[in-house]
Amino acid sequence: MIKFFRKIRQNLLNENKFSKYLLYAAGEIILVVVGILLALAINNQNELRKDKNAEQKLLKQLLIDYESNYSQLQNKIDQRTTIMTRCNELLDVIDKETRIHPDSLPNIFATFLLDPTFDPIDNDVIASGSIRLLKNDTLKEMISKWHSDAKAYQETEQVQHDHMISSTVPFLKRVGLMRNASFEFWSNIEFQIGLIEQGRNANSLKLKNNKGKIDVDYILNDQELEGLLSYIFHISLANNLEAESLKTKMLKTIKILKIEIEQK
Image: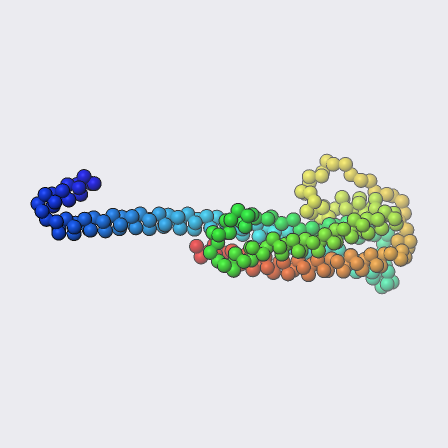
């Protein structure tokens, strides 16, 4: 093709048709430029198609991660709701509004051994730079803030975890309920959700229950108990309020992700 154009130019020069030569040369230049622009346009289209496919892949993965995190967060909320319900049950007993059977006391206190801590999937879209693929600015902003929002919530959870270790466990040891509460905890799969997979501990060693009589009056009349229950309720409620706020943001993000996936 190049030889063909070169031959035409040479013929025009040999025939002293200089004006036609210039016109032809200009046309050839325009043709080359158009070819280059066309090649660039095709290349840009290919890059846009690649980015679009990569964005869709990222959107779908983010949706999976956020839905998984949402499910886990709801589980933590449910656990703390159970904890608060048990706190109120015992406080009603302390206030003489209801009575309690001695055999149910270890199960109630086993609930306070729950340690609902949020451990979300942390997609590295910011560190990897793949967040640039997202076209929705609102979505970009929400995902950019996700890490700090989750971390702030986890810091509140840490307060409850520390209190369980420093106050709840020592109380159970002191009033002689630690063994029975631990037995109840590891005998009830609902307490273990988030710690182990169901059935994974089927062949593991089991803690034996204490068959001795539980001194209910001694435990319920302990001066520390009312304050302990009140604080457990307080910090559980505070955590759930933080969790509900985080859950609202997650739901908004999930909604946008679904819309972006459907539109593409």
